[in-house]
Amino acid sequence: MGNSIDQLRRRTAAQAAALLALCLPAAAFAAGQPARKPVSTNAADTQYIERGRYLVRIAGCNDCHTAGYAQTAGQVPEKEWLLGDQLGFRGPWGTTYPANLRMTMTALGEDDWIKAAQTVKLRPPMPWFALRDMDKEDLRAIYRFVRHLGPAGKPAPAYLPPGQAPAGPAVQFPGPPPGAAAALK
Image (cartoon, rainbow, N blue to C red):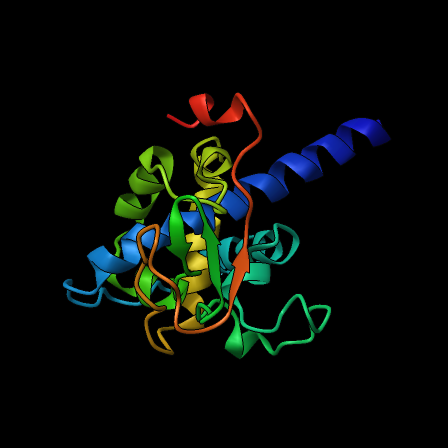
Protein backbone atom coordinates (compact mmCIF):
# COMPACT_ATOMS: atom_id res chain seq x y z
CA MET A 1 0.00 0.00 0.00
CA GLY A 2 2.86 2.41 0.78
CA ASN A 3 4.18 1.99 -2.75
CA SER A 4 0.84 2.95 -4.33
CA ILE A 5 0.60 6.03 -2.07
CA ASP A 6 4.12 7.08 -3.13
CA GLN A 7 3.17 6.59 -6.77
CA LEU A 8 0.04 8.70 -6.28
CA ARG A 9 2.05 11.44 -4.56
CA ARG A 10 4.62 11.50 -7.40
CA ARG A 11 1.87 11.59 -10.04
CA THR A 12 0.00 14.37 -8.23
CA ALA A 13 3.18 16.42 -7.81
CA ALA A 14 4.13 16.05 -11.46
CA GLN A 15 0.63 16.96 -12.56
CA ALA A 16 0.49 20.08 -10.43
CA ALA A 17 3.88 21.25 -11.69
CA ALA A 18 2.72 20.75 -15.23
CA LEU A 19 -0.44 22.70 -14.55
CA LEU A 20 1.50 25.77 -13.68
CA ALA A 21 3.47 25.50 -16.91
CA LEU A 22 0.29 26.32 -18.72
CA CYS A 23 0.53 29.83 -17.44
CA LEU A 24 3.42 30.86 -19.66
CA PRO A 25 1.29 31.40 -22.77
CA ALA A 26 -1.76 32.19 -20.69
CA ALA A 27 0.03 35.23 -19.29
CA ALA A 28 0.31 36.65 -22.78
CA PHE A 29 -3.40 35.98 -23.32
CA ALA A 30 -4.29 37.44 -19.95
CA ALA A 31 -2.57 40.75 -20.62
CA GLY A 32 -5.31 41.77 -23.03
CA GLN A 33 -8.29 40.44 -21.06
CA PRO A 34 -10.45 42.12 -18.41
CA ALA A 35 -10.08 40.84 -14.84
CA ARG A 36 -12.61 38.18 -13.78
CA LYS A 37 -14.63 38.22 -10.57
CA PRO A 38 -12.89 36.65 -7.56
CA VAL A 39 -13.76 33.06 -6.71
CA SER A 40 -16.26 32.84 -3.85
CA THR A 41 -15.21 31.34 -0.52
CA ASN A 42 -18.12 29.15 0.55
CA ALA A 43 -17.46 25.82 2.31
CA ALA A 44 -17.04 23.86 -0.93
CA ASP A 45 -14.62 26.46 -2.29
CA THR A 46 -12.66 26.35 0.97
CA GLN A 47 -12.03 22.64 0.38
CA TYR A 48 -10.84 23.36 -3.16
CA ILE A 49 -8.59 26.17 -1.91
CA GLU A 50 -6.99 23.93 0.72
CA ARG A 51 -6.47 21.17 -1.88
CA GLY A 52 -4.99 23.70 -4.29
CA ARG A 53 -2.63 25.03 -1.60
CA TYR A 54 -1.48 21.46 -0.94
CA LEU A 55 -0.96 20.70 -4.64
CA VAL A 56 0.98 23.91 -5.25
CA ARG A 57 3.17 23.20 -2.24
CA ILE A 58 4.03 19.57 -3.00
CA ALA A 59 4.22 19.77 -6.78
CA GLY A 60 7.15 22.14 -7.03
CA CYS A 61 5.07 24.96 -8.55
CA ASN A 62 6.67 27.44 -6.19
CA ASP A 63 10.17 26.24 -7.10
CA CYS A 64 9.95 28.18 -10.36
CA HIS A 65 6.96 30.52 -10.02
CA THR A 66 7.93 31.95 -6.59
CA ALA A 67 11.21 33.87 -6.45
CA GLY A 68 13.60 32.49 -3.81
CA TYR A 69 11.38 29.56 -2.82
CA ALA A 70 13.79 26.72 -3.58
CA GLN A 71 16.80 28.62 -2.26
CA THR A 72 15.09 29.21 1.11
CA ALA A 73 13.69 25.70 1.52
CA GLY A 74 10.17 27.03 1.06
CA GLN A 75 10.47 29.83 3.60
CA VAL A 76 8.63 32.40 1.48
CA PRO A 77 5.39 33.84 2.89
CA GLU A 78 2.29 32.63 1.05
CA LYS A 79 1.41 36.22 0.11
CA GLU A 80 4.52 36.17 -2.14
CA TRP A 81 3.77 32.84 -3.84
CA LEU A 82 3.31 32.43 -7.59
CA LEU A 83 4.31 35.96 -8.62
CA GLY A 84 6.65 34.66 -11.33
CA ASP A 85 10.38 35.20 -11.46
CA GLN A 86 13.05 37.14 -13.32
CA LEU A 87 15.26 34.04 -13.47
CA GLY A 88 15.24 32.67 -17.00
CA PHE A 89 15.54 29.09 -18.23
CA ARG A 90 17.74 29.04 -21.32
CA GLY A 91 18.27 26.19 -23.75
CA PRO A 92 17.92 25.26 -27.42
CA TRP A 93 14.30 26.54 -27.25
CA GLY A 94 15.39 30.07 -26.25
CA THR A 95 14.80 31.57 -22.80
CA THR A 96 11.55 31.12 -20.89
CA TYR A 97 10.50 32.75 -17.63
CA PRO A 98 8.16 31.49 -14.90
CA ALA A 99 4.88 33.34 -15.34
CA ASN A 100 3.09 35.36 -12.69
CA LEU A 101 0.29 32.86 -12.18
CA ARG A 102 -1.72 35.22 -10.01
CA MET A 103 -2.06 37.73 -12.83
CA THR A 104 -2.80 34.94 -15.30
CA MET A 105 -5.54 33.36 -13.23
CA THR A 106 -7.20 36.72 -12.62
CA ALA A 107 -7.80 37.03 -16.36
CA LEU A 108 -8.99 33.46 -17.01
CA GLY A 109 -12.30 31.85 -16.21
CA GLU A 110 -12.17 28.45 -14.52
CA ASP A 111 -13.40 26.54 -17.57
CA ASP A 112 -10.92 28.41 -19.80
CA TRP A 113 -8.12 27.44 -17.41
CA ILE A 114 -9.10 23.78 -17.37
CA LYS A 115 -9.41 23.60 -21.16
CA ALA A 116 -6.06 25.32 -21.66
CA ALA A 117 -4.37 23.11 -19.05
CA GLN A 118 -5.55 20.01 -20.89
CA THR A 119 -4.47 21.13 -24.37
CA VAL A 120 -1.44 23.40 -24.06
CA LYS A 121 2.09 22.51 -25.18
CA LEU A 122 4.80 24.68 -23.63
CA ARG A 123 8.52 25.25 -23.88
CA PRO A 124 10.88 23.67 -21.35
CA PRO A 125 11.36 23.37 -18.51
CA MET A 126 7.61 23.35 -17.86
CA PRO A 127 6.30 19.76 -17.80
CA TRP A 128 3.11 20.53 -19.78
CA PHE A 129 2.63 16.84 -20.52
CA ALA A 130 1.93 16.19 -16.84
CA LEU A 131 -0.43 19.15 -16.70
CA ARG A 132 -2.38 17.66 -19.58
CA ASP A 133 -2.91 14.47 -17.55
CA MET A 134 -4.15 16.17 -14.39
CA ASP A 135 -7.57 15.40 -13.04
CA LYS A 136 -10.12 18.20 -13.59
CA GLU A 137 -10.77 18.48 -9.87
CA ASP A 138 -7.07 19.05 -9.17
CA LEU A 139 -6.96 21.68 -11.92
CA ARG A 140 -10.03 23.32 -10.39
CA ALA A 141 -8.42 23.26 -6.93
CA ILE A 142 -5.23 24.91 -8.13
CA TYR A 143 -7.21 27.53 -10.03
CA ARG A 144 -9.28 28.39 -6.97
CA PHE A 145 -6.26 28.54 -4.70
CA VAL A 146 -4.36 30.87 -7.03
CA ARG A 147 -7.46 33.06 -7.42
CA HIS A 148 -7.80 33.05 -3.62
CA LEU A 149 -4.30 34.55 -3.35
CA GLY A 150 -5.48 37.45 -5.52
CA PRO A 151 -3.73 39.40 -8.25
CA ALA A 152 -0.34 40.90 -7.39
CA GLY A 153 3.06 41.60 -8.86
CA LYS A 154 4.09 42.28 -12.42
CA PRO A 155 4.40 40.14 -15.54
CA ALA A 156 7.46 37.96 -16.01
CA PRO A 157 9.92 38.92 -18.75
CA ALA A 158 8.90 37.96 -22.27
CA TYR A 159 10.16 34.79 -23.96
CA LEU A 160 13.42 35.21 -25.87
CA PRO A 161 14.00 33.15 -29.02
CA PRO A 162 17.18 31.07 -29.48
CA GLY A 163 20.28 33.18 -30.02
CA GLN A 164 19.08 36.13 -27.91
CA ALA A 165 20.92 36.51 -24.63
CA PRO A 166 18.83 37.32 -21.55
CA ALA A 167 19.61 40.61 -19.81
CA GLY A 168 19.37 39.04 -16.35
CA PRO A 169 20.29 35.71 -14.76
CA ALA A 170 19.35 32.45 -16.46
CA VAL A 171 19.83 28.76 -15.79
CA GLN A 172 21.54 27.20 -18.82
CA PHE A 173 20.09 23.84 -19.93
CA PRO A 174 21.91 21.50 -22.31
CA GLY A 175 20.22 20.18 -25.43
CA PRO A 176 18.23 16.95 -25.20
CA PRO A 177 20.09 13.64 -25.38
CA PRO A 178 20.50 12.07 -28.85
CA GLY A 179 17.21 10.64 -30.08
CA ALA A 180 15.10 12.58 -27.59
CA ALA A 181 14.76 15.64 -29.84
CA ALA A 182 12.61 13.67 -32.30
CA ALA A 183 10.18 12.87 -29.49
CA LEU A 184 9.74 16.59 -28.78
CA LYS A 185 8.36 17.33 -32.26
